[in-house]
Image (cartoon, rainbow, N blue to C red):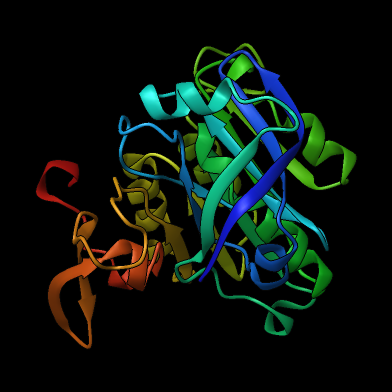
Amino acid sequence: MIKDSQARIIDKKSWNNYYLFSLESPRIASQAHPGQFIMIRISHHPHPLLRRPLSIHSKDEKSIDIFFQVSGLGTDLLSQKKVGDILDILGPLGKGFHGGASLNGKDVVAAGGGRGIAPLYFLAKELRSHGALVKIFYGGKSLEDIPLKEKFKRENFDLYCSTDDGSFGFKGFITEYLKTELEKFTPSRIFSCGPEEMMKKIAQFAAKKNIPAEFSLESVMGCGFGVCWGCVKRIKKNGEEGWVKICEEGPVFSSEEIVWTEEEK
């Protein structure tokens, strides 16, 4: 883990309440892997006190990108930052997605809902660099909730978009679209991030077709490195269930490890 108190915002883009920042942080960029995250100090004032966790969306040699949606006080304050502003960040944190040369020449799916698409761009580029054939499933409530679709298109990814209201692409949930497409092909692996109910349904599809799957879980985090126990989730390890810190043991887990809560079954 690296503490970079001088991470400068070098680029900023926005679409309604979605934001994409580029942060100059060579040391963190050099160690970042798909699925990992950073913790950002939002303000130098006592409130809000806690840092906010955000997935690493992409990286180059000297910088990392973060993509987020305004969903509360912390992200609202973050969205007001300007190019040239300095952020205090910790990272890269957590354990990311698995992939690599074993997926060379094989079909894989990366499915994201809304802001859950954030870590999947980094992952998709990494998988493709190893020869995987990546299909992106990107869903949102409406057209304004899938602002990164053009970015994926520019990179020539095989892109499948859905909107709940039918304003763009398939009309319906991304889970419905994915289920339809899985009747036509069977990927070697599925990766996903987004609302937990969405991921639970994808886990069910994957289990029925015996497709290995990995999911990046979201949680409120206080520290980001396992001290505060604020992000626990029931996870199955070696056949036994127990409370696990998402920030330390995750945020990425295999489908078989995740214990979905009763309310979601």
